Structure formats: structure tokens, C-alpha cells
Amino acid sequence: MLIGKPTIIPPSEITSETLYRQRRQLLGLLAAGAVSFAASWVGINTSIAAPPSGPARRFSTLRPSPFSTKEAANTFKQITTYNNFYEFGTGKSDPAQNAGTLITVPWNVTVDGEVSKPGTYNLDDLIKPHALEERIYRLRCVEGWSMVIPWVGFPLGDLLKRFAPTSRAKFVEFTSLFDPKQMPGQRIHILKWPYKEGLRIDEAMHPLTILAIGVYGQNLPNQNGAPIRLVVPWKYGFKSIKSIVHIRLVEQMPETSWSLENPHEFGFYSNVNPAVDHPRWSQKTERRIGEFVRRKTLPFNGYADEVAHLYRGMDLKEFF
Ligand SMILES: Nc1nc2c(c(=O)[nH]1)N[C@H]1C(S)=C(S)[C@@H](COP(=O)(O)O)O[C@H]1N2
Ligand SMILES: [Mo]
Image 1 (cartoon, rainbow, N blue to C red):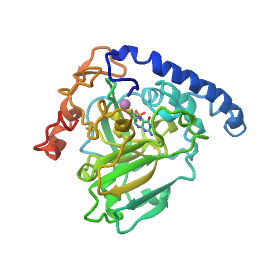
Image 2: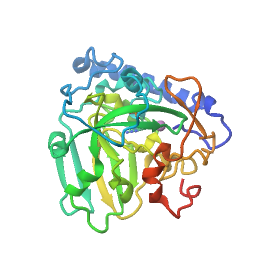
Image 3: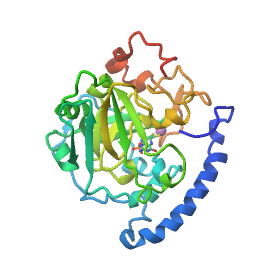
Image 4: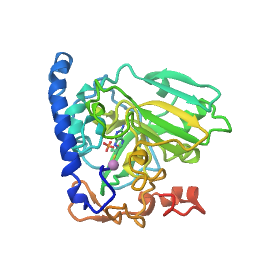
């Protein structure tokens, strides 16, 4: 998930130049921002794994899911302190340190575009009709690390159906919050803000695709994409967009932040595929956070039986 020219920089080096500069710029901004946020965020802003700013909801009636992996989950600490959330900095510990400024209550989500019943709902009304499940999924980041995360969520497809997609709805576009006051990373160009992602409609309707509102039986911590984020377990982690405010059904393939930034490195599909190297590194193996010996990366992140049929007849080297 790193920026730079698609040349010959080995992945281990990428954190040096561009990111180093961006981090320094950001640290400056964060130091400045701390002053104005101090009044309302004393004590929260500085803590690792900041508590969600909303009520610390605990989910008691979670249905287990047959889609859950039986692999051991990563710890709450690993899941909440090793993150990518560039709105809060490009370092892995930046989101846990900085996402305390994200205000998640109240939170509204708009669903519109090619639907017969568009609307804007506050979060509670949006999730109320849905039975929550625990979904323990692998997450494979394009950078070469992975985790196992017990999400709390429900199928995106169930939500989309409530809005009655029209026959012209071929893709779904997701947009994260844009607010440089709350999200200091948005004050400089790391990506084209707000963060945008997209899915084909059949990918969006697939039962493995969920909206998550919690992890380990409680509200999502801000750094994990509070209060609501997408999780698409067979795709590289960057497709799983955080802190969503807008879901739009569209006829044309939408632009997405990472492929806009670097179309040679990040495709629209971004299915986990050990046979297709990233231009700057191999995707054959991954490091499970907490482990030392690298594992083999599996096609579709191990979900091939469930999703490979979606891509039948497609050349996945061309549509990466
Ligand atoms: N809005 C937004 N969503 C985002 C990102 C981001 O920088 N901004 N990073 C992505 C990447 S690269 C990954 S690997 C996952 C990480 O999710 P996690 O922090 O819950 O593990 O979030 C994805 N969603
Ligand atoms: Mo990622």
C-alpha cells in the first residue's frame, strides 16, 4: 500500500523516501492539530487503541457464521495497533495513536444512485433490521502481511436489497468520510481524498461480503474503521474501506483511490492472487502478524471455493 514510482524499490525500502517525508509532514500537522483538538480530546488522543468515541456497545447475541475460519484469531491488541488508515498517518501505529479525533456519533450513511429507494440513515437505523454475526476472516494486506479478525457484521447484500437496486446497478462505489479536521492525513496528498473503493454488483451481493461494525464483540475502534466499514475477505485489504458515509450504486466501474494513484500497481479487482506479483514485490507468501515463518498465500485468500466462480472466464492477470 505504498506510494512511489513503479520502479525497482524493494518493499523493505519503501518506507524510506516518500513515506518518510509524508510522515514528517504529518507529524507536524498532528502536533499543530493537537492544540485545537486538546479541549475535546484530552486523554483520548494520546492513548494507543483509543476507545471508540461512541457508546462502547457490546454485542451479546451474535450468530456464529459457517463462513468463519477455524484458524486462531489475532489478539485484540494486534488487530487494533497494527493498521493501515492513511487518513491518520502512513505508519502502522499511526491510526491507533491518532484516530481519537474521529467523531463517530452521530453518523449518517447515504445509499443512492441506481436504487428505487435512496435514503440517508443514521447508523442505528441503518443496522437495526440486520441480525449481527461473528465472522472470523483472514485479512491479507497487499503489502504482504495478514491477520485473522473476528468481525461483528452482516452481509452487505442484505442491506443493498433494502434500497432496491435497479437493473442498471452494475457496480457499487463506497466513500469514506472526508473531514481534514478530524482526519489529519487528508490535509496533505497521500491519496485523492476521500478514500473511495468499489465492487462489482455480484461481488457486493456475495454472502462473504460484509459490513462490519465491531470486532471481538464490541464496537469497532476508530482505527479499524469505526463506525462502519466494508470487509471483503478474498481481496487485498485496501478494498475493505473504512468509516463509510456513502454507498452509491452505479452503472460504470467506479474510480477507486488506489488505482487512481497507481493503476499499474493496484487494479480494480485486487483479488488475492499469489500467481500475480505486485510490480515491486512477490505476492506468493505472507507474514501472519505474530508469526515468524512466512505462510503461503492462497488464491482468493483461501476463499476460492466460495468465490472463484465469480471470475470464470476472466484472465486474472489482466484483471488484477
Ligand atoms: N478509508 C480507508 N480505508 C482503508 C484504508 C485506508 O487507508 N483508509 N486502508 C486499507 C488497508 S490497506 C487495509 S490492509 C485495511 C486494514 O484494516 P484493519 O486496520 O482493520 O486491519 O483497511 C483498508 N481500508
Ligand atoms: Mo493493506
